[in-house]
Amino acid sequence: MSRSAASRFDGTVMLVTGSAERAGARIALGFAEAGATVYLNHVGQATQAAATIDAAKEAGYGDRVSVIEADITDAAAGAAMVDRIVSEQGRLDLLLHNASTFRPVPFLQLTEGEFDSSIGVNLRGPFFLSQAAGRVMTAQGSGRILAILGNSLSEVWPDLVPHIVGKTGLGRLMEQLAVTLSPAVQCNSIAPTQFFRSDDGVNDALRIARGEKPVSDGAASLTTEPVLTTQIKGNVLRETSIEDVIDVLMFLADAPASVNGVTIRIDGGRVHI
Image 1 (cartoon, rainbow, N blue to C red):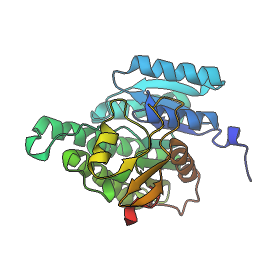
Image 2 (cartoon, rainbow, N blue to C red):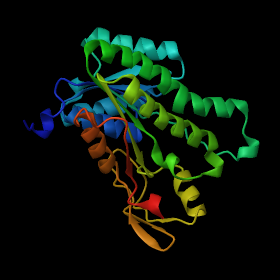
Image 3 (cartoon, rainbow, N blue to C red):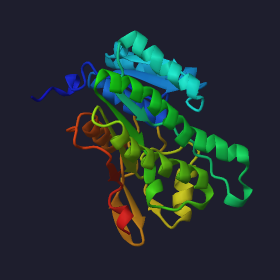
Image 4 (cartoon, one colour):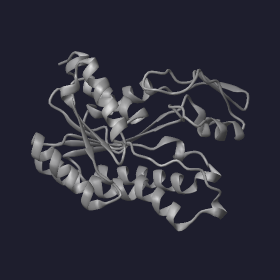
């Protein structure tokens, strides 16, 4: 039975990591607009989270969005976050691993601290948070865990090695959990190319250094449209948008249960170049 867009996820309780602002906030608000009860996770971004709550209130669904602060790299803090959501809502239906670190550092200059920070956010945190959520979802008999991997699976970025390793590991974790937590929990990933501009231009600068020519339409915000095209090796490809990402995440959030352990690329075909 089809449902209207505003009620598509009625009754769904969702946690989005790293969602106080920017892409995470847009994704969280998209699901809240579609009826989900959404928890915005952040660390030390109370001001940004408050602005996102205000945007939800202005749009008319502020009662479906809450803020929850926790450092996902701390397994105990992640478990406590899941426990709080369950105590308030009685369940947890959807976990989205969105939190990420992105700090370019040449490989030969990397420190242990920089490595641990990146792996902590991109892999260790999601590992134990999935464990906490998996226990709840298995007990309640259903649930979905989704992860945003980016283009780490198919591309090499020499100044982002820990990030690439962490996100690649996260993809394999989702594949492992698709079987480990079956049949109650479905675990899937998406692998979009860049779909949100960085405020400092680092993302675009790295892409240009690789020989890409992204066509930008301005700085990012909660409402800005992303670039439209990029040129790679003489080929002009459609660029990924935040709307593309939200659409595919929503598909995976209520896809048939047999759609499990997959990664959907959202890259305009760049993986084939």
